[in-house]
Amino acid sequence: MKKFANTIRMLLSLKCDESHELISSGFDKDLSGVERWSVRLHLIACKPCRSVGRKLRHLHKIALSRSDQPATLSAEARERIRQKIINEK
Amino acid sequence: MDTIENSAGESIVDDGVHWLDEHGDYLFSYALARIGDSHQAEDLVQESFLAAVRGKSGFRGESTVRTWLTSILRRKVIDYFRGQRRAEKKIKLSACDLAVDTAEARSDDRIPVDGLQFSNVFDQCLKKLSPAAAEAFVLRIMDGLGTNEVCRTLGISARNLSVRLHRARFALKECLEKNGFHG
Image (tube, rainbow over all chains, first blue to last red; front, side, top):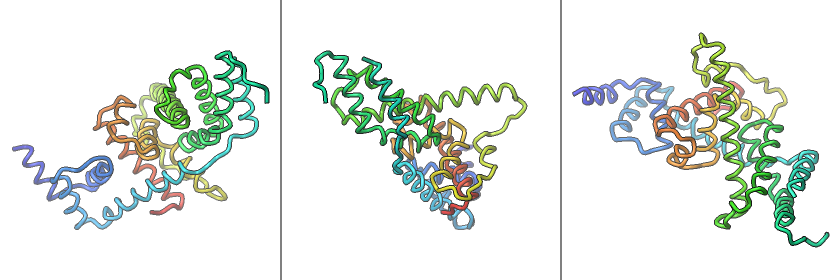
């Protein structure tokens, strides 16, 4: 009964931070039917939350492009590491 | 180039030097993008090469050398975050009246962006996360590991991972937006 009441509450009055949590989880797992519909119904009524999914996708893109950026070991660091490796003989 | 001597020690060291030439920059880029500190990144790369040379038997040829070296470095990066968490706990214990969520509290201050490039801003925002949130984000989003693998690697539950990722995403989003990167 408690679970049923919570399902109804989620569907009818999901809070913004709950919708954020579910939108975030949706990137990592399949949401349940109730979770998906709760978010959909919330987004109909809540304009600010509508852009959250797009913004998180953008964040992931930014993070990936950061991880693709090449950097170069400084000559000093490279030499230091080379010496350390040679000392392993 | 001198001929390679046959003693096992020498050939492993030669391999190590060769790996440094081949993969040094790649590994440095990997570490730098994830911890945002070039000195620390250099140290982690150095530790990884030494671990690789010492435990070369760990390389079983099931993957490329680069993949193998990256997996050693990833472990070092996770250890680095673990060290950060220990340090954070000590700070919390010495100021235990400050019961605040560090992931959110730290995202408040604005980073001066004048002249700084995008990667610097991203690095600074990533560094403002709690280490627990940062390591989850790094493994799941930047390394693209599956949720089960991240949970296994960090020894945490799926629920815990979900909470960490949620905190990381929203703190990063907020920090990037404050610094002029709007999605």
